[in-house]
Amino acid sequence: MSSSEIQICNVDENDLEALVELRIKAMQPSLEAVGRFDPLRARERFVNSFVAADTQKIIRDAQLLGFYVMHVKSDHLWLDHLYIDPEHQGIGLGEQVLEKLKQRARAANWPLRLGALKESRANLFYLKNEFIQIETQQWDNIYQWTAIEGIQQCLEK
Image 1: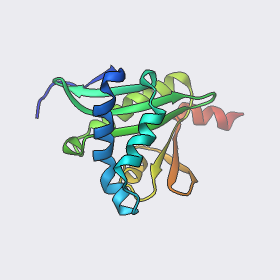
Image 2: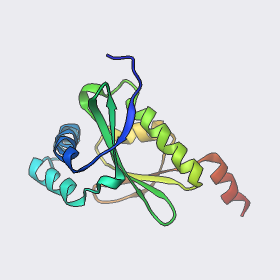
Image 3: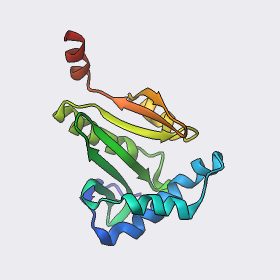
């Protein structure tokens, strides 16, 4: 594996197909575990909601390793997608990216929220990275991370 640093880069419409393929590859085990793997549905759901301006790719040495989609809401940041190519999982890339996203949330003094498929290994990943489950939906668990400074400010009110 290369020792060079990862880069977070803007995407454009030309990146869409590669992102779709990576998403399907990364989600397949979790969706199969709950009996919901359908590559056509996974493709349509992502393509229909794709906003290039909210999407960043994770690359190293010109290789696509993953991507994320972050939406700015009225009172929080919503991490809509974070996918790391399965061939590059388990080596800390997701944690590196998550730390950058936490820094962005901390700078905005907003919580960072996301949803994870209930049966996905991502649930343990987010719990390990200081997220707290705040809601359960039909298919997803909703998590939130708040900077300690933000929690203290809320407690003082």
